[in-house]
Image 1 (cartoon, rainbow, N blue to C red):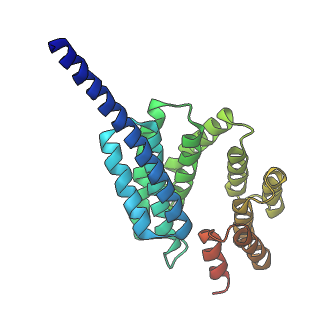
Image 2: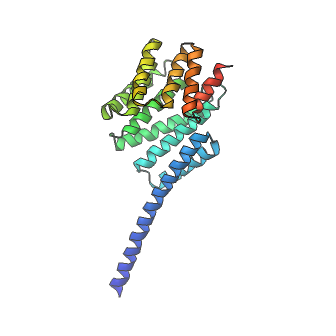
Image 3: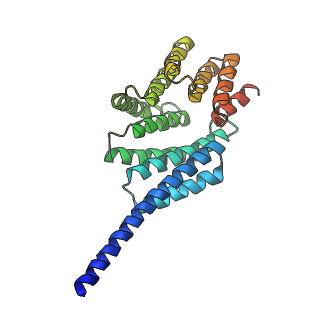
Length: 244
């Protein structure tokens, strides 16, 4: 009878552990869905709820790679929300920067655990790209080396990955000194050959024209990005800034 009781006890423990694992997976999946909704609707309440949920789940599973990545993305999404809603080109209060810094810390932790995660290197690149816009010279030079390193890692891990091809085009367009507009656009055209309906490419081309003060071309590309993705909030913001 004692052996039977012990067997039942450990069986129940096993079921509870399995239930806990499945519950965590379902929670992470739900948070991913919420994050996508928050980004799509540019909803602060949804993003804040998602971020709190990610951090709570991460407290229980601090070494879960998927949760680390999801939490970093949630912080980046909150930084995006703050920047997009700023009256300036990007937020100058430092609130956006706090989320970027936190996301970078989380991504570093993730990459220390698994240096072979392409998605993490790509996210790190764009986090650093945003960080550089938030700090002035010479502070930005402290991040240039890390930016190049993240780019090199991403290229090595996924040379033909569409996300990496876009990263390469972004890197070429944002190099210093700025390359000629035609050269930057040509880099994005290479991505469009593989993904002709990728809204982000048109948005990025709009930024290139914007920086060159070619407002008409910038506006056309922002409008194309919005036509392909009606929830492309950055394109909407920059288009609105053109008419101010």
